[in-house]
Length: 284
Image (cartoon, rainbow, N blue to C red; front, side, top):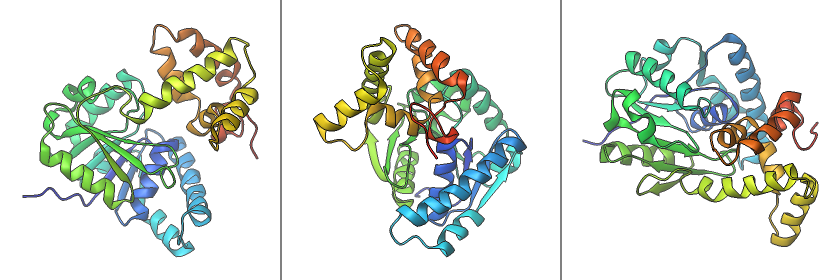
């Protein structure tokens, strides 16, 4: 019997969590969006309002009625048990720190229904790093979205050797149903497909700037002119938000100096990217 996904919960309402929630709701699913505080949820409400406007501007055919209906399908809550009570699928989008993931899954496992599928949106951690925390390794896998999901609409699906094949297929079908292009990853690899290509590229750019070889603007200009790409690496970093690359850099023994440079020069000054109005560039 095929697994049916009808109700979805998103844990974490940051930049990408809010996007996942809105994209899912836009395609007709009821969504519970959970975060740990009312302050975080207030910020999420602002992000969702901004996404509604963005979809009307950038998504072909999106109307005011459709985007307002999408917003209405999203319930914001700081009550974890209530958030997952009816969930067929929980998509975790909490910070890229293993201990935070562990705490989240241990709490989640205690309150979620037995049938609920857990999916991590982790960009670098392997599902097998986290599966023992979930209490249901056969119903756990990775579902990784790229930032600006309405535009860069890949969804990488990667299980472990203990993930039930029916669960894997159900998540592939779900990804298709919300307008994503499913990318099936056959076995575990840190970084999946996208970040296996993207992270070394972005790290090389940061190394050039941190080592005073070239300014971020010059690095971006070089990449755009030489390749025809629409964005340079530092423009991409501003879109992603600087906390995520910082967490990735600080976790690597060979990249901690780059993490310190990013923290001292940007993060500690509140320059986190587009979301805060300034990162490597200033935004209106």
